[in-house]
Image 1 (cartoon, helix red, strand yellow):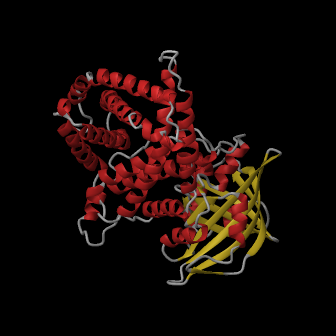
Image 2 (tube, rainbow, N blue to C red):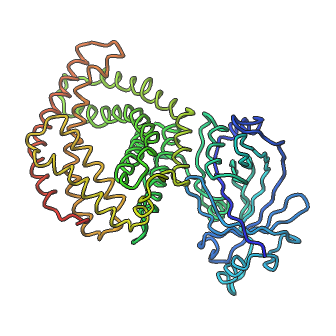
Length: 521
């Protein structure tokens, strides 16, 4: 009796022109390529009226290729970081109707029958794709990856929706080979990790949902299983960070919404915080290249974000507060010019680079191929297998200890120390957001609420420090007129006065935060 195979597949969305260019390329560095073959595929998807299979992450279809029909059941169809690894049971059938008798794996057949029961299966939607396939073979170890360039449409309810996708399926060799092939193939071509399988896209279209616009992406709430392992928690947190980073890369490129670079930088900071919070259980050298690249990208995103804050939160609100003799026209003109011609352009160009592509694919590979393993650390297996609550308590207590060290001297902190305390509080907040689902809400929310007030003060201090650099920020324009100088002087003076007033509340907010019960103790 044959067993069903588990396929490992990386699904990527590309601009149609970019996909055509890659399709025409004969090979990729380090790989040889077979001759391209193009077929038309028609796939009909089935489910019960209440979508039992979809809810169970199963897709069931029959596909026509040439004169032949193939029935396929995929179990575990979720997509994470563009990677899909369902169990696939594939068998020839006589036509477009389903036939469970041909399924050789009893586990798959019994699972389907148990779920469906007496419910009626019917056609939900179909896809019609022109698929061009080519196989890449790595020269060093013979790893084989099938490329499938799909261009077509989803059909449902008399309507259609275009679909363009590149699928890279591992046929032989280590899982890591898929990501390495993607780097060699894509180079500097921007891509999106497909968030959905074709089946899920079909369901969404049949329900009337339109494709999502590339808008700023906020991190979804992380849900960790109580008693789950440290390793699985780390993997799920990395997946959340990767999605936030990769989606906001595209949001920055597609619009001037200031939330895009803001959420991109937050995603990168969350990633770096995760590396530090899980450091005791990781291979110490495994995170360094990723951490370094995250820091570089965050700095470029930060340059644009800082200008957005300067313009929208530091300078513009003072227009209504300043005397009529103070004009902000030249100052805002210069700041917006620097933002458009320097920060935004630099970030946009960099996010299209091969370096950023490689970073995203390396992070995906690290996440899905257990890149944190240390073959020389014989205790790591035990540490990774321990309940996540044990690690979370230790990690949060350690981070709180760093904040406590600064807080005890809050009235005497130097400017650099205030900055370090602010960064320590950010890492603490990300840690609580990572692990918060493991603790009662009534212990998490009060602490976060208290700490947010304190963070707001430190964040404002940092913003005002940027305002003090306005003369340097505006210098690229070459302007040195009295109007601009007067506006800068007013901005700095007004916010410095506000800073002094706000800082008077810092000690009180700190004492309230310190006295609030901690969820991890």
